[in-house]
View 1 (spheres, rainbow, N blue to C red):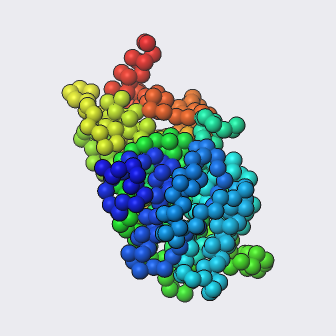
View 2: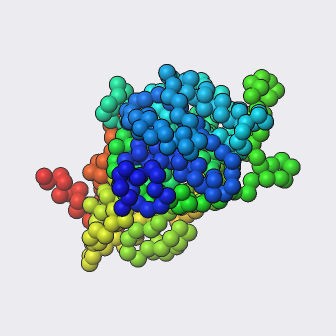
View 3: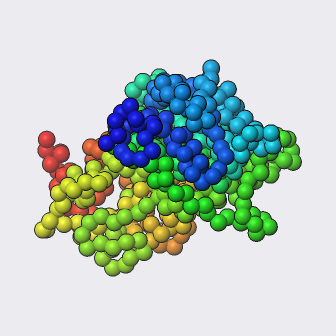
Length: 434
């Protein structure tokens, strides 16, 4: 295990890190990977402090000499809007022809109310886009239970409206891995990419493999209108008719490039839990129920399924049910790393053969609505539930913060009466008797 004092300088190995420390390591990893590939790049970080990312600027400040040595400029701003404008300036500078490097990777940080404040600047930046050898990533701190905020935070709807793909890490390792993917996705798509960081992920601690070559991005093959490989051309003239083309590409080929990247790099992954089950597209005794979850909520869902006797926690070796209580139908589980945009082909593959999909997520039914939109009108499409059961009763609250117990409660209410999920029904009855 790498010593704490070496967590930012070690080139390989495992280090104990919080989510915030993984965010601080990320620009260094990207620079190291660029250098290894012979790319001439630099990095620029700007934002405004605020929990759950409140210690990010302090962590960067404590390592200012190291950042300078690695050609990473850290310039905290007086507010989030000016920071967003400054980060977008890095993409413009790289396209000016006067830069000393071929590309500058920009990082913006702030909590979800800060993203609200900076929305106008971010909207302009997303429309203009990013440089293919630079890229821009927005770290947005979400505080779902308002632990240290005046309002509860959930940023995905805003980021999607601004035109950003949204990646949702589950733990510090995910922060580093998905952060690396976010930079590569931004470069290939010409879009800013949002990284949703919840309080528990920012504050959480875990062993993180820090190797810069841990992630090898795969560029998707996305042809432009002329059949050539797509590369976004950044334009700063925010006037018609150029604006119409910017919007067209943002909603069209650039978003398609982001989907292509997610699929090429297998960011979203499906698996099957339970006895006597097989994978997507199976028939007969295969799973008839699917569950979709992302980020920290995915880990809570794994823990909840373990409590219900229907699976194991992520990376765990918990007890498996046996005998008459074995979950014969099995459960198909989809872990989303990118919650916007969803990849229609992945959702269709996941849904094939299922009778019902249960979407587990905090706050509003953002992913639930997207899944329903993709499957609407598809012959034999499964029922999609999430915030509410088909009879209108609540499954997962739209307020507060979910945990493994509340997820287990919601899943037990839905699964308890289904054939093959006797252990979920037993858990529900035992809970009611307490």
